[in-house]
Amino acid sequence: MKRFFNLCRRQRERLSLLASGALPDAERATTEAHLAACAECRRYFEEVRAVSRGLQSWRDTAPPVEPRPAWHAEWVRAIQPGHEPMKPRAETSLPWWQALFAGRRAALGGLGATWLLILFFRATAPEVAQPASQALLPAPRAVLMALKARDPWSEQRVPAPESDDESAPAQRPPKSPPPRSERGANHFIG
Amino acid sequence: MVIADDRIEMPDTRALLARAQEGDAASFGRLLLPLEARLLRQAVALCNDPAAAEDLVSETLIEAWKSLRRYDETCRFSTWLYAILLHRYQKCVRRALCRPIPLAWLPFFDAEKHLAAHENQPADGPSPAGQAEQHEQARELRRAVARLSRKHREVILLRFFEDASLPDMASVLGCSVGTVKSRLHHALEKLRRMNLNLSPASWDTQT
Image (tube, rainbow over all chains, first blue to last red):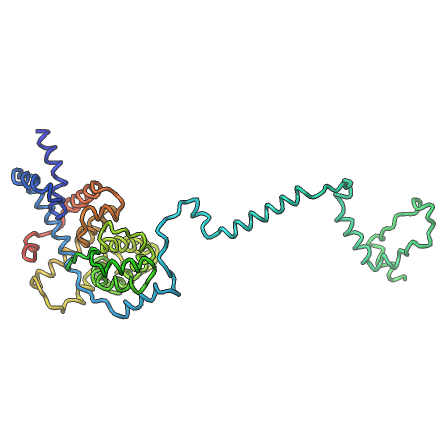
């Protein structure tokens, strides 16, 4: 009994193919012989054939459509040179590692060359020995000097040290602008 | 629908294909000229709207042009085109679920509006009552096929709308003939289990 049901089960796929008209001719004879002998499979076949004919009828209910010449000209124009796409694509599909870099080769090559140049010049440039204080504080000092040079109050109040005694520079107070609170008073006095 | 065997065997068709594969757009246009009506009808059967079908077939043909060099004649040219059409259609349906579009694009759209437009055409087969019944059953089948999984829907549409053979289906779907057989069987089995209201007698009067 079990063998009988397995046989029917195996025939079901062929019956579906037969109902849809896709069964190869070589298998048709055995399937039709089984169909003639098995009432259960005949019922199954009729149901599948009804579905199959329904699908064929659905296809036939679609009305015939006559292509418009303007539509034909339109899509043919879309594939002409000058439009995108101009030519059929290459038949080979790129693997992911090539697709990742496809179209960006120039940019990535330029970036790589720039990095190589930077590394090359850093490796070959001579080491300049600088004191730690100078190396750390050039920018703030330059900024302070520039500010001092542009400060009109410091120019008025602190004269240039041409006539000073060079022998005792350490005794003089450091040249620094007066506190902000005194600047306005000096201005009004002077 | 008349399914003509348009396998590329004519020498001039082969020459047209070879020239098109080298980049000659005019040859591609001439090659597609006898296939346009059939593709349009297949597209109308899918999306139920002639204007949408024109757009769908245009997209299909442009896509076919871009990948023409991949066609290796292992299947019928029309089957290859129909596989692209199905792919584009499924893409449109996916897009349609994310944005407001004409309902006609949806596979479960009511076909009555479109069918009413063709009501005045001369009936060449069944009576008007039989025709209405066919349209009703076609609509039911359309809904049923839309409920199938993508793999099952593909084999059903390729088999019944393109009349593709098993090796051709295996070629365009990229699987073995055994897989195609199994999918076709399971798809038909699912449709059978849906208990659709199909009357075999009405089909017999037509076929």
